[in-house]
Amino acid sequence: MDKNQNVLIELIKEIESRILDGGKIEREEAAALWNLPYNLLMKLAAAADRIRINFLGNRFDSCSLINAKSGMCSEDCAFCAQSAKHGDASEIYDLKSTAEILSAARAAKAFGAGRFCTVTSGGALSEQDFDRLIESLRIVKSEVDIALDASLGFLNENRAAKLFGAGVTRYNHNLESSRDYYPSICSTHSYESRVGTVKLVKSNGASACCGGIIGLGETPSQRMDLAFTLADLGVDCVPINILNPRPGTPLQDTTPPEPMEIIKTIAVFRLVLPSATIKIAGGRERNLGDFQAMALRSGANGMIIGGYLTTGGRSVEDDLRMVRQAGFDISYVC
Image 1 (tube, rainbow, N blue to C red):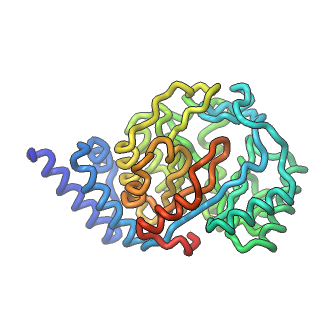
Image 2: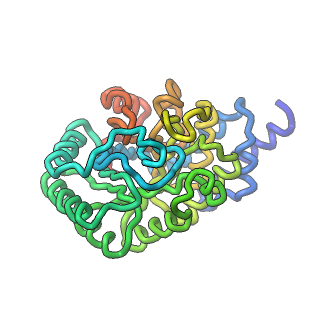
Image 3: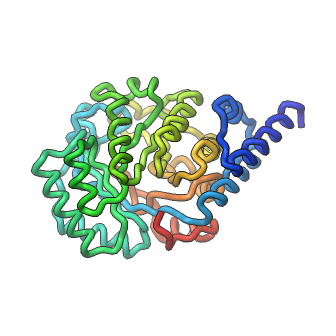
């Protein structure tokens, strides 16, 4: 092992010790870890795993989604099959009924999900649809013992009050990428408008779920910018999606990152966000494959289970078996 690799090993040890003592990783240190050779990756992953155990124990976040309104989105996010600007490569339907949402929540509870997230396409629902959905969520809250999340686009104070008053405790609004790369993947709204919604969630005392997608064409530095922005915002839950290129979208021919790059990303995110829930989310089955369990011992402590918005997942039974075998407690709701 050469001198540079010994320096990197000592750097990992020093960063881990500092974080366990309540300190933080510096940006220059994180940059050095992005360049870590893969033969040292297990040392980084083990340090991230120990940090995860120190701050979160074996608690595991399992979340099930319902795509409650699909397609016809006026935004132009380059990765999204629900954008009308890309020809709507996804299924199209209006807001689902209370009965459909309630049935999905009961199914999520039955197969072991700790949280149930209602997601709708578009920048924001109409007032009529928003109020309909609020009533649906009130009914779900009263009839199903499961924590409620939502991802309904941009919020204002009035909508936030209604939403959290209906029993939703966590709101998802991803930043997707870094501030400087964001205009390359979306031109119909600003990065600051996304940040503003996250801040609004935090100011209402709710849990902010906010992450992004890796493999959009961003540089390692831009991926690192996203991690530090999330830390600065104090988000509680960070879904790490891995690009699963959708036919018909501008990124349909993009090559996603390899498994070891994904593992490295998860580990570095854990060092930057030591006490946040970090979930491996969309694209994990395709891009991590047999390395999914390794991701759970490299800093991650959560997953979306039961499929995604426009793509399916693997069986819930296989996922939960993997989680248990990795040593996590799936009975705890993060």
